[in-house]
Length: 493
Image (cartoon, rainbow, N blue to C red):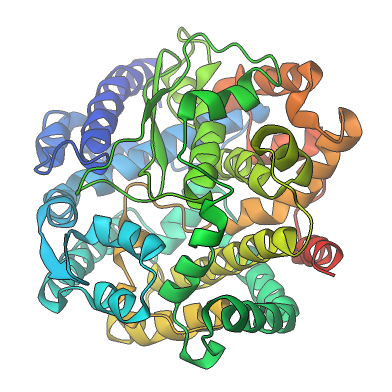
């Protein structure tokens, strides 16, 4: 790839991602229903030619920076090609999720606001109604998603890959096959403790036998009114200061925070770089409870990865990041909601009794769900028969959750532009990185200036810092399930 081509990719890449991310933020924050994703891609047609990707298909050479540069550019070009080809489907999916309303559980809901309702609905029969939703709407969504996945699979094959999963593995460097094996081991090794503790808490707090419980019941259990008394209405400015002031972090511009309720807003918090480092946005749907705090802190960890970058750096290092790296920082900061010292210092929570066990069980089940998603994504993005996917999804996710999973929810979340289906890799890295932070700085690393200097130094390198280089810096080996299992065994005695 010659220098003129690289300059063209950088110039057009900035424009494409700036327009795309702004449009996606408006839709997922519930401000805009009808999107123009297809128009944005069509305005950059020359960037979407498969020949551009094929011109950098050769393995990268050189030092770590050169390899990261090559991987980011090739990943961006593959994503642009697939995204452009499937953009009509994306527009229709986003409009349906954000704008089509239906009645369930005595409420008027969208597919997105239904997720928030499940977090707070105390009556099981109403949760069941909300979970069922409108079968016609959900069927329409699944049809659109199947069409989009079909297009992405065909495009992947046209680029020389056997499946979309194969392309994703090659361009992301995730190591999907190894992650699949680690997810299997983790689920097997934590089955007993998860089933035993989850069943006990279901009976104690909801008088619900585990055999009758669904994932939606578990969602409510871990965000129930009992925890809302500890986790009051979120104040993003105050919550962000526990991190920024605690570590004396001074980004050029703090992220913009959106915590308004809107019918078409994504329930799970998300962050997007709009014009890094000057403009990064965080959106959290205020469903109430620990969910809001964890979502916000996860988003803050993600956003900070873009807040210290040099705006004059090359496109690939300003706008693009290793997905596992951003997942790792999301995991690190989101995990503060289960750190006793942080809870006592900033939320004045007495972590005695079974409170901490309950919060840590919640974290275990989150890790198990992430492991299940990694297993299922391997199937979904492979070359299997799509007719079997609902049953495969139900089997895998029911096993991971230890309660019933609805097979109809087998595809949409995995094709979302916000999706991170392999974030279980970050969960594997979590215990080692937390131990490194405590040993290098303080048990309360989140309130030490030196930890802030360390992190801002990493973030200032932009896309040059990858998950692998972070783990090497921390003196950590390739994350394995045994470490994560041992961490839960030690904390859930």
